[in-house]
Length: 390
Image (cartoon, rainbow, N blue to C red):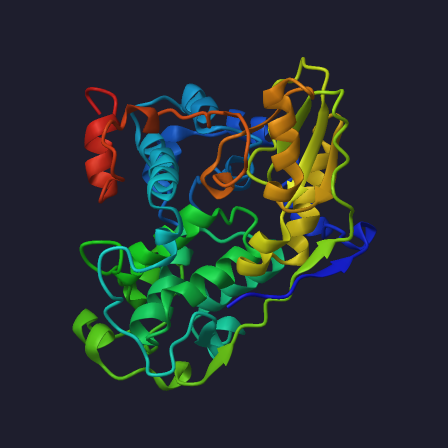
């Protein structure tokens, strides 16, 4: 199912003040946040909603920071390093399996409602009125701020997939639309991990788990049951009514890039906004937004506003709309013949179809994976790439 992108005045894409304050859209803000990370506190408290999590994910997703930079700051052998390695695991799977990450990776999702669809979720969950405090607060955070604690993401996914029987793809689309850190691979494969289609067993959380890590004291909810009842029992009444997600896409109304054949060109995508990339080179710099990608994977106006603000922090970067194949094919061919200045971009699995030379994606662990096939699990990946002694 694809949305039909409309166009809107870029000036109308204003970043809400609360979002800008929570996640200032610049590399400088990401570096400042990285400098304040306490790896030991993270290891002790990361599962608690009030724990010492890093909140680095939007900066990592959009390339303002890299995993190697984060590892250099926090060390390569602790719990935080392992969690950062998950991001490279997801990217490696995406690079090797392509669109396969959007299909059940190993098996059919264990529980699916008769009306399950790739954009259909329980109405009460989407509207944040399940009656379960931790779930409803997570939905408000998702919609209002574009951020949800990772543990709460798992609770929402488990509720949608295992209790309501919703298709994991619907939840992934919902998250991808709102989350500032909505990386295609991390998001889709995380939902598969929870749903049980991409992992050895499904993830499930009961009310006691939510109470412990969200500091709530609820009892008698539809999650306050034994795990066997949660997995095999009837769909809770609160989750019976479902709704088709409305995920409208409004791209900034901008023309295609104008590539001067006499000048080198550096093409950026939304996952590579690194101001240090070839910073000393005299080149035209363009951030290219592809309508076809956003038709398949819609973003909210807040996501676009954050992206445009982050792009403005990259010196000389202009923003354009267009299809990478159409924009780059002739220019790349001319450069290869010596009839035009060089043009290149940075590698990323979501930009694998971009023609022309590319610089490698910076990695801290994934380059150590030697097998041609993607790893079947994170544990297999970590056994191969982890620093000795981890």
